[in-house]
Amino acid sequence: MILLKVKQGTDTHQEALRTVEQQVTSPLAIQAAQAKDSTIKCAADQIESVYFITRNEIVNDKCKQLQELIASITNYKQLTDFGHESYQATTDFIKCISDQVTTELQLKIKNLKFGVCIDESTDAATLNQFVTFIRYLDENVLPQTSFLDVRPLSSKGATAQNLFETFIYVSVDHGLNLDDLIGICVDGASAMIGCRNSMKSKLKDRYPFISIVHCCAHRLNLASLLDNQKFLVNFSIFNPKQAIIHKDDDEYGIHELDELFHVYHSQLKEISKESYLLEWREFKAQLTTIFAKYNTREVCQTVTKRGDHSYAGFPSFQFLSRACLTIPVDNCWPERGFSQMKRIKSKERNRIGSKILHYLMNIKLNGRAKMTKAKALQIAERQHAEKERRVSGQKQLQSQFAIQQTNQGLETLELVQLNIYETSEFVLE
Image (tube, rainbow, N blue to C red; front, side, top):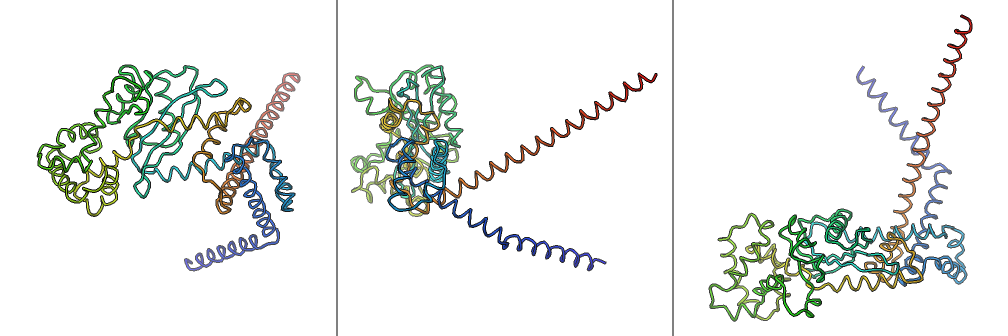
């Protein structure tokens, strides 16, 4: 009996497989697959043209004219016959390209310590825009700075609470873990870096280990220096030349280490004070003998690269060397971002929405100089899959709505019939 059931199940399974194979190899299925490939290829060509106008700061309305020019020169009529030439279609392509650029950035910064540069400014439409750049170390332990986000501040303006809330929203939207945040660089505005009731004080209350750095370029114009400059001086102990000068001083670097470990204590909980002092003396010997010819950045990069091998005995200094390379000390990148924002959202294009402004800046600042054919096909396939899911979801909602309306209609019909029956009984009585 059991063997018979297994055989029946096996036969049913084989029959189902044959049915699926017939569906896949049927002329209709082959024709549908060819149509899909042709659609994706045409979409990839359009994505390349959209990427070109975006990178070269050309208005979106010129995309159709560019495609017509390409079609007339190359006799590639499918580019214009494909359709999807409206403003909304161009915007959808820009969104897909920006999403791909963002995905690549998220893969780069995944599970890494990072720093951010933030600032706010007014655009051509007199809206306060909050821009964020992220600083991280790449696979070659070289510091990189990338555009992360731009969005308008709420009607509350550039207040400390509004700046703080906007930064939290940015970190949540981009999936950033603020426990991995090393430092933030800001300008000298009181709402940003004031001692009381500022964005700095609010961040310190929630994340006390974060280093808030006042931009060195802004600070050059000030007569007095702020406390964060004293903190950054502690990293000078990693300068091999300073270590050589103080090679006979047993107490060299001890005070600076206390300051650094006090700030990053929450991220170095497993390391005791005695262990890092012993580690420091051994590390200082390495500085004075091996790294005498290197500068501070080269020392930090070497320690970070070899942290899992030659310098496995210096885990805490590997972290501090990464922190030294990751903390941003100037706020020049947001200024560059605002310059780019004013080029994109000019007086002639001051009606650009917040989302499309973010997409355009993301492509311009983080995108490659030229898009490859393979990358365009990848984005087109992603867009096609998202469109199929969206259409499928809409059909499902429409089907559910139709069923609901039908059920309501049946209930209404039954109610009418019941009322007629009750009325007839009343009349008969």
